[in-house]
Structure formats: C-alpha cells, structure tokens
Length: 178
Image (cartoon, rainbow, N blue to C red; front, side, top):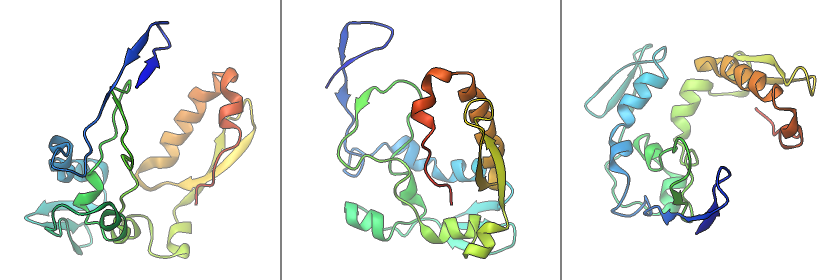
C-alpha cells in the first residue's frame, strides 16, 4: 500500500500485517488478554485463575474454550473471552495495511459484555449518564455508560475535540451510544 504521511509529502510503503486468524496471530497481545482484562475491569474482576475469570460477586466465566484455528464465522458467532484479543488495537501511526476482517473490537463474547454492562435494557439504563458533547461547538449531549469511567473518558475526548473547530464536520454526526 502506498500512503502519504501528513508530516511529509513523500509516499511511504506499509507492509500488510499478517492475518491474525492464521498461525501468524499476534501472540503477544493474544496471550496478554488476562492481564488486560484485570487492568480494564478492576472493579468487576477479582482474579483469573486457570481458565476461570472470577468476578467480585463470585460468579465464574470460562476464559478460553480451547478451540483453536477458528474460522472468521466461528470467531463472530461463538467467541471465547480469549478470542476477543485476536486483533490488537494498534497505538500510533499505522505500520501495516489491515487485511480483510482485521477488525479490533469486533469479536465479542456477548455473555462477558452482558455481565459487565447489563443483561437487559433495564440493567444497562441504570448505568447510563448524560455528558456534554462538544459543548462549545455543537452544544449536544450524549447518553453513555459510566462503567469503567467511559463517561469521564468520553468527556475528556469531547473537551479535546472542542479545541479543534476545523474537524467539526467529522464529529457532528455521531452514532448512537446505546
């Protein structure tokens, strides 16, 4: 792929990232899933012992279903919690052109997220709060979860975006959050 770096006018070539579903999976990220969960959800997860996620309320979920070499359809339809770490989020400038289906965050274990955010519409609504969205430029509000301080983080993002009025056309038509 040929791309132009915005700070330079010279084109650069980006190599394709290996297809993470194949044997060339990014194992460093995939194997760190347990640590990432403990860091991301300290108010919910007590510990991960063996193949079990033990929540603060003492409920337990299986982390890995031990099925290897899942197809893309299997990853989408019946992922383990570990499968959610198949594709890492890459911080900073892209070094690779994403392959087909290289989609961080798309593989989701529904039972895990229902446990974290609510198993029903009523349970989810209990944790929703309104925040200002681009208060100085758009004067809007967004309803978003307060679980793991998503509302605080999105408020901080809104404050930063509000300082960049040139991008208003890119952030004024936001998607839904529920």
